[in-house]
Amino acid sequence: ERMTGWKRDQLIVCGIYAHIGCMMTACDAFMNDIQPFLVADALADFSAENHAMALTWVAQRCGVATSAADLLANLGGAPNTLDEVRAEVASVLGVPVEEIGADDNLLDHGIDSIRIMSLVERWRRAGREITFVALADKPTPADWWAMLSAGAAVHA
Image (cartoon, rainbow, N blue to C red; front, side):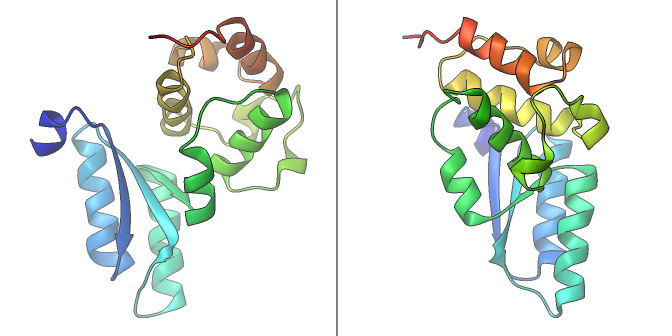
C-alpha cells in the first residue's frame, strides 16, 4: 500500500538472510506488481550456497539479480547507442556484453517478460516512448535501438 501511495513500482532489495527474508520480499513484491531487484553484493547469508540459491531463484521466477555497480549504472537514462542497448541487455541477463550480438534474438539468450518490463520502465522514465509489446515483438538489440532512437525525445 505504501509503494502504491508513493507511486513506486520497483523495489531494491538488500540485507541479510538472502535465502529467507530477501528472497521472500522479492517474491511478495512481484506478487503485488512491484518489480524487485536483488543486489547480489549487498546481501549476506549463512553460506555461499544459500546466497547463490536465493539469487538464482529470484532471477528465474520473480525479479532481477544484479550487482550494486550495475544497479547504480542503470539508474541513469536510456541508452544512447546500440552498444549501450547491448550492455543493458547483458546486464539484466547477467552475461558478458560480448555474448549479445546486435541481431541476436534475445529470447534465445533467455530474456523474459520480467526483464523486458524492467527495461521498458527504465527507458520510459528516461523519456523514451517504448512498450513491452514492441520490444517483445522484435527482440533484437538492433531493433530495440531503432525503436529507442526513433523516440529519443525527452518528455516533459
